[in-house]
Length: 350
Image 1 (cartoon, rainbow, N blue to C red):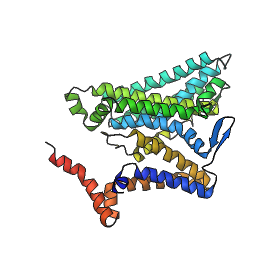
Image 2: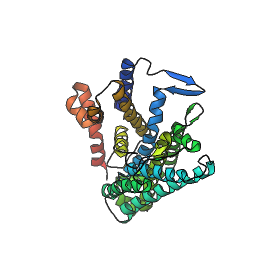
Image 3: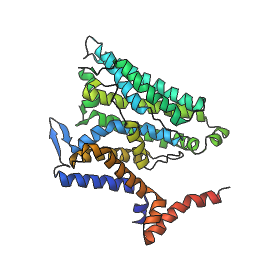
Image 4: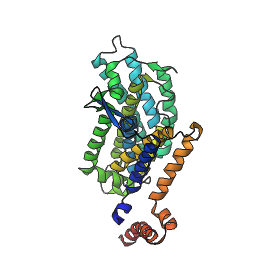
């Protein structure tokens, strides 16, 4: 029991379970899943489908934060990706041409990766603080997206493009399968090779990593490019699902939701360690929380405050220092022991 309570994913999973129970109380058939035309439907499927773009963005954000950085421009990249793809598809004489749609998608991905490399060069090459470097693109990128769309909402009628965010494969939404595949491939890449340790090393101490021969600059540029690629994928999902590109509202505030998902998942914002599985649970918590707001009828004007209170509560419960102060008896001593472990390691380190 002690190991369960002390596990870093206990509180996020407990919050996710509590949210699901709350939804069941207000809507008894919330957990029911129906089969229609060979496809699975239901509230749980909707949570996974609507949470797929957030999961993609949060995965990229996790690796950036692992290196000690942060990327505030992912929301703008979501808007740019959808704008580039929809603009090129809208100019096609035949929007059902799969080959032309694939080229439009690849162009959108390439543009966002180039912008991600730009972020990485500002951070690793120019030595600019990550929050400042990406804040520039966060502001300018939204303007770029509106320039691409001409300040209008570009609509498309392309069935191949709609498959990305609205299609089904194997009974599940294709966006869910794409996000799950990216999660698994990213996990295998960083945990079955030395890449994950190198990223944590750069995030823990960049200068020490450089002195022992780790190419910290190249790794930093790579993770920013990967983060931009994930944001571009999320932008394609969102725009294809609604068959339109809105440069002003697409991906609005998704960067904050992604950071919250990463924090809830147990990744340290100071860098040096990360947990992709925790990020996935964090993304599900954020999306389930959004669904819960509508299910229980929280007034729209208090929605953001409600989400902030819930996220604050789970972050406090994850904090050993907070638990050491508020929990009684053995629980307090246990939390204090968890808090003292890193200090003991620092004291014994050569």
